Image (cartoon, rainbow, N blue to C red):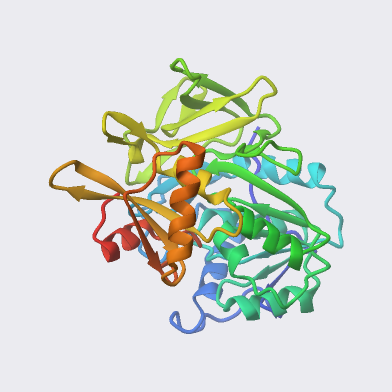
Length: 397
């Protein structure tokens, strides 16, 4: 039996901001409208039923791929994006799960804020096309214009990263948005409050996953503080080689896993039969709620103690009114290395003192240095570009 494939549902429409894009339009200049170029790649592939990859750079050859597969990119937060192959069926399965889980209706419309080179935005586009919804692609606009387009178009479902949500202006209320699916990083308390203010009718669900795994967990308002939720439907999670604190490698078995790397590789990604790990550490409680510690690739040793920068970032994100924070490492001639917290804000001595006090009160490994950066450079995925932030601050990952 042939594998399911993406299709462009006859009821589906695509809009750039608020302007509808007609199918089979003549190609405009690449520099003027890269989003339209990306749509043409998708449309051609769906029409001809061939593998495809939406990328700003030349993707690897795809002619050897199964016609029912496609390629997409990892987020590239701490290094060059990798190109992965996955079956179209692996995403189609979750399209229908989402439609059932969140009661999609024919009147729902989907909006994506990120570039289609990022798997989250591409996922939102393809979900809408396949299921027959209007899709609004807002990646080419500034946050104020994105917000205006969301309001004018009465979009109801939004796919976004925490950074993209944080950038939406406070002045425009978006009452039509009923569902937000947020992935790609830690959603701090300040951003959560911010989005509840401008999207008062939205159910906010933060999910944990990776380009290689797609959805792993899904959280909601009932998830305990610090948890990334419980297993997404049809996903199994195991914590293996756990230490005395219950911290071990997160292994996943699900119908949503990727097939393999086409460009780039990760020594931390391993398979064990139907199971997969991307080298992420965490714990799971008796109710099945997952708590992340961090990736093996970013784990460092400070004074003979294993430190996960992602975990410290998440703990700092729990502070009230805390801006975005990146934990990096600076080489130290005396101690070998020490932690640096880079805060996305203009220089703020009061916030520096409050952060150090919070770390002491919470028993956290405090950064030795706290620095401020007015705005974080971002990747096309909408995530902070840690490589660039490290270079600008004289740090390393």
